[in-house]
Image (cartoon, rainbow, N blue to C red):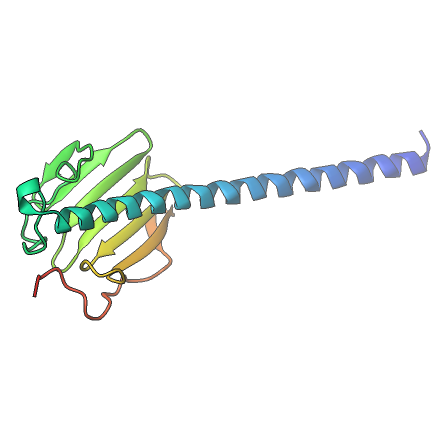
Length: 167
């Protein structure tokens, strides 16, 4: 084999190797974005269930637009969703590869969707509902790195004029 042929072969191998590495990185990034999108979609669906429960008349098992959500017994089960645990103001469902937490906090209802197991590059989508109007929510996305959740969006601030109280 001549020097020129050997040089072309090495150059071809370098180009193919670079293309494979670039393809793997693109696949991993698209996979990560798809997981975030899946969890965000599920968090929005649970939030929609909370709002629907809040607006449903009490005769039909809802809050009737007038009860204090934060002082209620709101749970995943009341929303028609599967529930595996309940403890105080928190209810949870643990699936094969994710966990949903529904938590009644001081001013908000928090929905956490976290990827299981909590290992490097696992993701967490957190949504807080501060009331029924359409702009009364905040969303945060996190990634598990170096043994802790890394919140890239900072603290979820409460939008102005939002409240669960009926007045």
